[in-house]
Length: 159
Image (cartoon, rainbow, N blue to C red; front, side):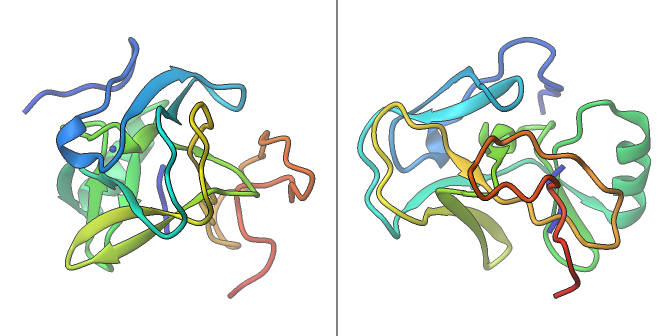
């Protein structure tokens, strides 16, 4: 999975959440991990859909072009051909930060990218997902601060 959430928004200013795609009350706030983050405004029980990752559906060729031209990348691989670019019409889920100890995980269900809670999430907690960038992809350092931080957003070995 790579992730690199009409109106084009590359998050130069404060991003927002499109509440049509959120199952719980969420807010955008400054993150201790990286720039902006998404925070729960209410209790989220374990195993519940939290938010859908939306954006423009683009081809692999366009994915490569956009990844090379942008400093901030909000690309999520949907399948072997399609990618969702959360920077274009994103729901806000595109700014969920990486952590080696995530509290949400993504699932692809009928061409929709959904984030589900891995455990109970308390109000005020930042939503965090393990990006699980490939072992063979460019190594990206992790700054999540988790006790079990592996030091990279990448997997440490092939799966």
